[in-house]
Image 1 (cartoon, rainbow, N blue to C red):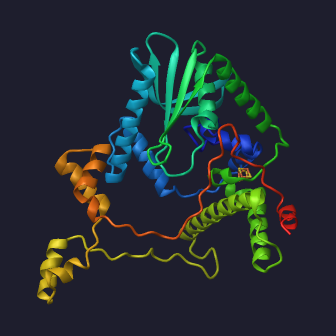
Image 2 (image 1 turned 180 degrees about the vertical axis):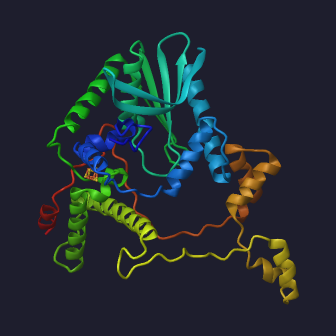
Image 3 (image 1 turned 90 degrees about the vertical axis):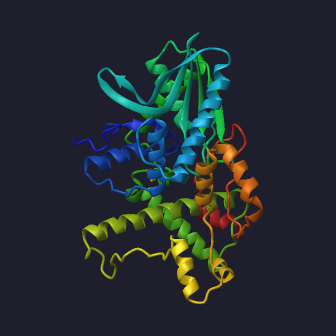
Length: 394
Ligand code: SF4
């Protein structure tokens, strides 16, 4: 069979741990689709591509970053240093590695892998610090019940069974909770390893069930999965029936589940739309009545000096001209960083000191935000049966 994901050898990896726990049948479907060359190619999300660039730079590779990516990288490096210093105390530490992929094998056969971003060890003992950077705004489970980190612990323990303690951390410069940590002793490492093996064994069962949920948006099989298609249809039907006044809008826990489904469905439909773009690019006549048109062009003026000179020839006073100008706060801050040679928090303070009183805010309408569950509560409720949900809501 031809391997399509060379890095992971088409096998399960820690980055899909949450999806595997919540939808144990997903691996079978992915494997089957891959075997028949049916795994739909989905164009890379530009945010994810930007995050990958930052990760490469964090690992020490030479890549070109834009201003925002540079700030994210600096935040990551600062958080890494803070956590490292705090974890090390007065002991000396060494770098174990950056972006290393760890494997579990059964004999010679690889079974599962996972890649950490950076790991350190203490010279004095068998303690390890393993960090994972998240560069985007998306919600993250904190380190203490993060499935990906738990499987990374299991992989590290399997490869380094002498390890006594592992501290794992998520560094997320874009999120309110910028850093969360969790601690694993030997017993918990063993448990993490056994849980991983149990999950892999369950996932290999031919009748392993597929349960759609918010993790579907990151599943490679999402465009070929009957279960998620069912979720899309049921959510759409319920929304229509609510709109037609047949049912009350569900509140309480049912409302929360319904909103979760709406968010998932939007993600799936977006991915489907992107897939159609790829298809139409390759085969312009594939879908009757539809074609690809050029993306929107946005008019911009970047040379303010020349534009001012020209405006004056057209009877503009200075005040007329400046009343048409919006400044890019991001670029102003970048430039301030270069001229004042400050970065990170210092830059934010300097910017506030210099320009804070000129900054005004445009407030958009309120947005929906999911409140993170309390410590110890699982994030994923089973997707409720929408028919029951509909009739119960009456
Ligand atoms: S799309 Fe969702 S339900 Fe379908 S296999 Fe993937 S995770 Fe499971």
